[in-house]
Amino acid sequence: MRKRHVNKKNVTFFTILYTLASLLVLYVVTLEDLNFEFAVKLVALLSLSFLYLETTPKVNYWYVVILLFSIVSDSLFVFEENFYHEALFLLILNRFLYIIIIYHSILKYPLKTLLFYAVPFTFIFSMIYLILYEYVEEIQLLVFVMGLASICLVLFAFLNLLSKNNKKAFYFFLAALIFPIADVLTAISNYISPSPYFIIVYHFMYYFARYLIYKSMILKK
Image (cartoon, rainbow, N blue to C red; front, top):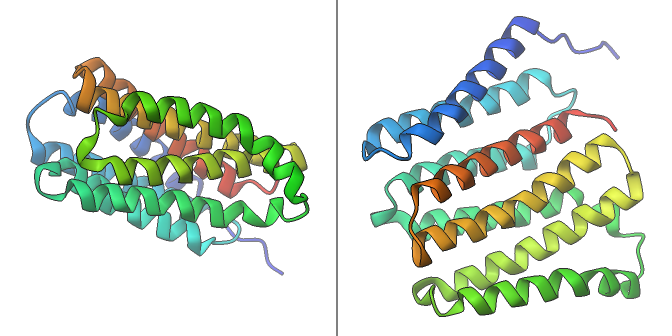
């Protein structure tokens, strides 16, 4: 089987473009120019998508769907006054798609082991959910489902790391861990203590986590 040719110039271009666009996002989210924010976020995620297609040895179509959903959800979040619930739904759906990508790695574990490792993750989520519960009345169900999906994702990513113990699994686990932390900061910023600093930090975390997922997807091990 012939080795797939990778255009290094394209890889460099899309890598730089994603980095610059991601950093620019941290600035534009503090402005009130929604069209500019929409354009920058679109450039960032499209560049990551093209970067993946250029560098992956084998296309994972679940991940391609995740990238497409990310583009749509980020676009909807820009205009969240009209599309917040739809954007949040796609974000939750992506968490389950991430789980689909790695679920096979936990099949070898017995149910007792899964429950043992699930306890600390569930405990932490329960404490956070109880704190946020009264502040997110309008989206309590969505927050609960997202939290549940995040628990499963972090748990599965952790077990995948234990099983494989390589860079691919480590990058995936680190991203899976960053996502819910960014979610909590988002909730705090939106419903408890609005702050431009929180907005900048959680956007950075999301875009960094997406790049880690990308790195995980292109590595063999």
